[in-house]
Picture (cartoon, rainbow, N blue to C red):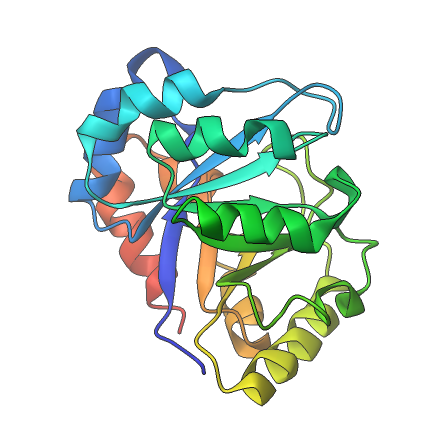
Length: 221
C-alpha cells in the first residue's frame, strides 16, 4: 500500500564532529527517519560508523533509526545494532548466504527488517522474502560513498517493486537512496517510492537550511 512520502536524511553527510547535535537539528527540521549508513571497508570501499556510535546517538532523538548495513558477513552484527537502538535494520542479499534467515533474525530481535537492492541486483531478489520484510531499499547509486549521481535505470526497478508491494496488500516502505535531490526526488516518487534518503540535499546550506531542504524534498510529492 502506497504511503505518504517520508524523508530520511543520511547522517553520512552530517558534520561528524557534532553528530549528536546534527541529529537533533534534523529531528527538529522535520526528518521522518534518521538514516544511518554503516560501511565496513570490505562489502563497500569505505568505513563509516559502528554500533557504538548508533548507541551514542540514540538519546538525541526519538525518531526512527533506519540502519542500512553495508557489511559482510552481516549476521554476526545484527544483535549489536539491535542493542544499539536501531529500529529498522536493512541488509543486502549479497551480504550473507541466507537472506531469509537474516530477515528472520532481525524480526526475532524485535526490529523491522529491510532488504537492499544494489543497482545490478534484480528486483526478483525480493520475491521469496517480500512477505516478511517491512522495507525495500533501492540503491540508485553503487553503495559506498555519498554525493554520487542518480542512476536513472533504477526508476524501472522502483516501478517493478511498487507493483510487487501493492500486490501483497501489505504496508512496506519503498525507499530510494543515492543521488536524491530536488530534481531526482520527483522522479523517484512518481516511480513509486515513498521514503527518500537524502544526505547532501538535506545538509547543503548548513543548519539554517535543514528544515527548508526537508520540506522542499517532501513537497516533491
